[in-house]
Length: 242
Image (cartoon, rainbow, N blue to C red):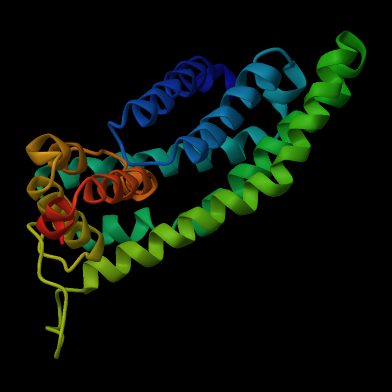
């Protein structure tokens, strides 16, 4: 298998470092820590084990990581492509938020086995320092793996709730619909805070910072603090922003 896919695998997984950059720049809403953990583990496996150790290239765990990584990325980018077109077919949506239940455990198992094979067949003698480093990184899989799976469970719950929200019109007092057609409390609260900021001492500039924040879910606290600070400048400012 490695003879046929090795070069493509190395190039494609190394190129995934761009995903960390995209997250840092705010081009995607994914948390930097989660993306770094996911991409970093793959880089560690392909360059810290697979590339250097022939035993890893011949081990059956290579099939696990190639299949798990490959299927995951095909479905993920198909989902992103359809999202750009404005509509994601339900089968792709379901696969995007369900396959992880199988592919994450198989991929993680493959990664761990690759490292263990590399440690026993090569690094223990060739480079004891890297052997110890591999032990430390393997220990990080203990908290990291459940964290990755838990993050996807949360994404799945939120995404299915959002997709199903428009099927039945709720009764009673409800959040208003946003431009995307859902009833996101986050979008509504953000709009309210921006409108209040525009009426205060910060004027349109303060409102623009709120509206243009790319990582609202993780950065809203600083905007709330700015809001309170501006409202305390004078009684008139407080009343205008109320």
